[in-house]
Image (cartoon, rainbow, N blue to C red; front, side, top):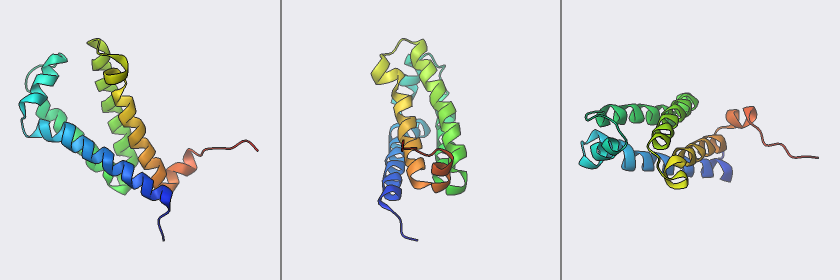
Length: 130
């Protein structure tokens, strides 16, 4: 079956989301980069949580990228993003650049999944007024 431009757009969004999560979040945490612990410390997290959070993010990403578990991965990512958003709100970070960043990531993630998964489009269709 030939993939449509909509499916390819979804794949590109999914790929960009995955690359961003790996490069900007998972990799620094799992490799012990100082920036990961420093950032979490600025947000009020105790020392030593970066690696565990990186593992959770990697698990969510793997679930999201496997077609059979992609919806579960997306739901779990949204839970993770909700916690990140709550942390940003708690420390009083700027609204549009920090507090809502998780929402932006979630929209890209779900948008990519919606565009590439016809079953998800059937559950959440766009309707046009006749």
